[in-house]
Amino acid sequence: MEQRIVVLEKQAAFQEHLLDQLSGVLREQGRLLERLNRELAELKTKEDLVRNREDEEPPPHY
Image 1 (cartoon, rainbow, N blue to C red):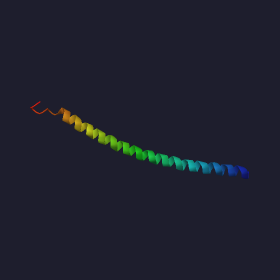
Image 2 (image 1 turned 60 degrees about the horizontal axis):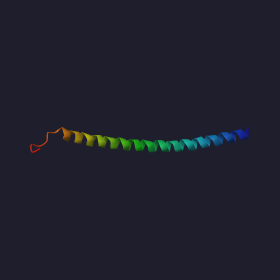
Image 3 (image 1 turned 90 degrees about the horizontal axis):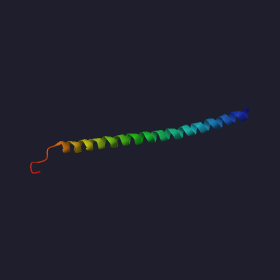
Image 4 (image 1 turned 90 degrees about the vertical axis):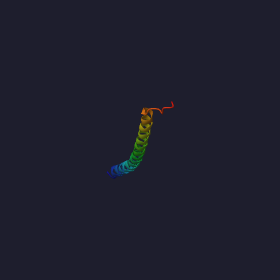
């Protein structure tokens, strides 16, 4: 019976460690996702600026 308890305690410790690692990975992915969303928003803003310039009429000397 005690051997089973030891095995269960080892499994619980392993799972707790694994959950801590996975939580760390999840936090890092969240930060990466936030950064990528900011970069995407910046690119969309730049794209809008370029498109607006393309829509403008060229100066008369063209």
